[in-house]
Image 1 (tube, helix red, strand yellow):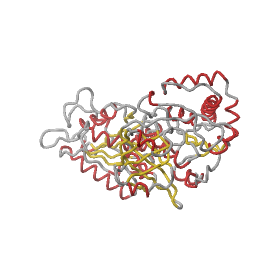
Image 2 (cartoon, one colour):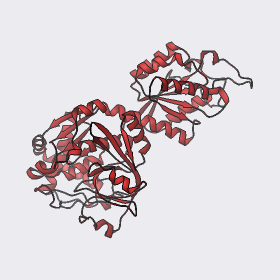
Image 3 (cartoon, rainbow, N blue to C red):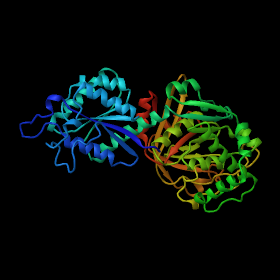
Image 4 (cartoon, rainbow, N blue to C red):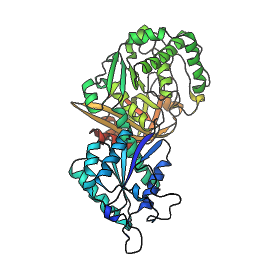
Length: 472
């Protein structure tokens, strides 16, 4: 995951820069503004781009309103606003935080904001000093009036909830920004008549900004066969990291690892960001079912789907942009309306690092279901913890996103065996929402799970992209 780049500007009306209030304090709350910038700079995987780059306050901050602030670090004029947003645009920030030190004159900023096309987060403080709530409300109303979506944060710098609100919005902006520059590599066409899986090239470009590179499975098979023996052995050695006991390097494992190496090579050659393979039936019947290859890619944070589930892997790719946890694609095998328990089951693959421990990962021969050339099956249970589940689907000429949350739990052997194929990868989830609504919102057999709580970020992304959310 790349760093999220956040621009940071502190606004102030020019007549208030030197104003002293009746209690003897400088009116602008530059102490709070500096605290706000520092609170973001302290976060992992975040880069804050200030304009100007000099801090508002040097050294220790002695309160919300301080006299030793850098006057030049306040954005007070129209010229400064245009210069600031031009600088932040060149820096390719994902969003811009506007912190209100007091009241400001909206006319000095609104054209620069509008022309920059950069996402905006408004940040005000719920305290009477400095009257910054007045400035916050003035800008909020102006952006609403002209139809510019924006984030709205009202809280004290340094408070965990406040910081998380800013970061969640910033991460959602990063994901949408990254998505608009992304390229999907699709090997093959529609798999097993899965109509909900099919991508619309024009629709994806129009709504998400994603380009699709179409390739056939023959290209992937040729590249897999051309992989050197030394590359296969290096890939085989990687399995030590993910499972306690590796399978023998037989013909099936050899082919699966060749597909893994080939997909990484093709990804780099074609500058792909995520991929999908029509494994059933061409790959499975003519070379290998690439379940192990997909499991290795998933463990490395590379979004790749089996059965060419285009709309699904688009969802999984977005989820992977928001958190470092692995993403699991699987069928919704069963929903128990009495217990709120949902079972996810894949026909052979899962990220190898989604289990609680390498000791819980087995790699036996794949059961004969679809595809006649064998291969490896990834056997595991997703580790217990928080879970976000999602899937983007096409409904008539629009896109919707099914979004759910829950807790993944470890199932006993009896529950594990109920699907009839216990030697396959599973996830067992206690749903937070209404199980009946959940199953009615499933517009495909597949759903995507990540072991983290990113529901708020997903909601924000849906808002950015004008997608209806289906929640349970």
